[in-house]
Image 1 (spheres, rainbow, N blue to C red):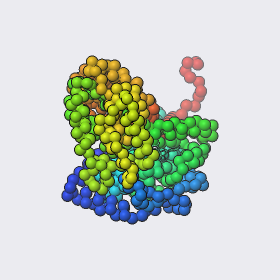
Image 2: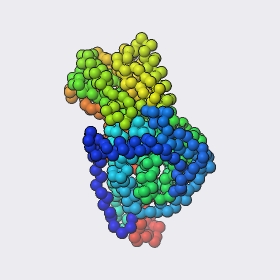
Image 3: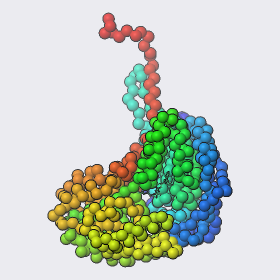
Image 4: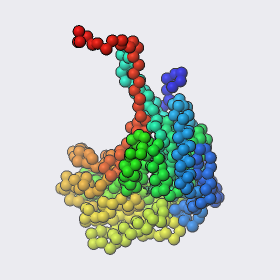
Length: 541
Ligand code: NAD
């Protein structure tokens, strides 16, 4: 720090715009969407502040219209990844020495760029690339990313203020050094905000980054990178590579200077990366930090005292918004027999009222799933449920990929609490419900805890405080984010720090100071004012 103890702006959550019919924001985003949809963009790699065109390209198509092209992106070869690493290490020499307030200024500016001039663009790109409705794009690409950027600056300032006690003859100071080496961000398709936050929060703490976005999110990742550039992130600090994830990761993880992995994605991939890091451990100059937020099999359990309408809404919103492709989406529910007829009727009515189609038509609540692989997997589970005796589809169950990857929101009811779709993460608009006897609440809580390997989010709905208390205790380790009388989705930065344990991740809570602490290595400096001159202690006399 230079010449003052600076206060950072107090972080506030970005208000969510409504996009109601006739609003200026609706008009602007639709115009931007049309313009982007009907043009071709070329997305190069971004290494050391330069656009790198490799000539080996891949087409980008919206999931809701897979034969339509919106452009292409360039694929990296091994030497591009090596270049990204070496330029990051070169940039570290100056970036890691830059006073923190300069880094803060860059990312606060990025937040304001998204809140203002880039808002329509980042939302439209997310609608096109990930097939989000405008509401889902707004709460993710605009608001959540703005919140991450603003709150992280505040968390950084709080961390730097955390200092040890000193005495009159010795002054103790802690400085929060960036990790030695370079860091690696691997990001998922489903949140533009996560994609932007993973590299940005490491860079904010003084680190240099190689960022590999998901192939299904490149269009919106490009807008994020445009924002970072305009905000003033210096050359080489965040380098972006696309392409074969296995080759890119192998190249990165075999570098002796690799010092941290910030991953969000599926559990299997994260475990593979962790294994590779283990295999390379003798080559590294430092023990790498490993942070991974991964899959979920998120639950809703209702008690017989719950309000049926609230249970039904928690199910329909929690399971089907963004086609169930939120890591926090409800995908298994346990409903007591006495309220089930009412809940069932409302859920079926709600689901039948959903409109499905392109996000450009703002009356659509449901759009397409991300890609053909996901579509085929979901169709397979739906077909299996149709064939199985212990499962029944009570609403939905159709699918069609002729134009886009459309899966009808589907509710499966099973008589087998360990039915496959009660245990496995499907990551789509499918929820499975198990109806239990009202008197079996305690046993059912045990089932909730033991049914899946994950522990990301979960919700209990009840009006009885005893029932809420019992669930809170019984499900202590079943979810990192636990909701009472709400759906299990929709965590807000600064309010509900997010992450789960067990197979759901390292639970380093994105959107909190805890996460930022993983990207620094504290150095304690003790300064003694009058140094001793004789080794003899009084007790020796
Ligand atoms: P994914 O695991 O398929 O991909 C995530 C990233 O890993 C992508 O960049 C991808 O290219 C890369 N990748 C894939 N295979 C790889 C390999 N063999 N080696 C190296 N990198 C590889 O996940 P996804 O489909 O993009 O996202 C959905 C998953 O992410 C779900 O499981 C969801 O629960 C999880 N998720 C979790 C959270 C959380 O906070 N816990 C948040 C968002 C998403």
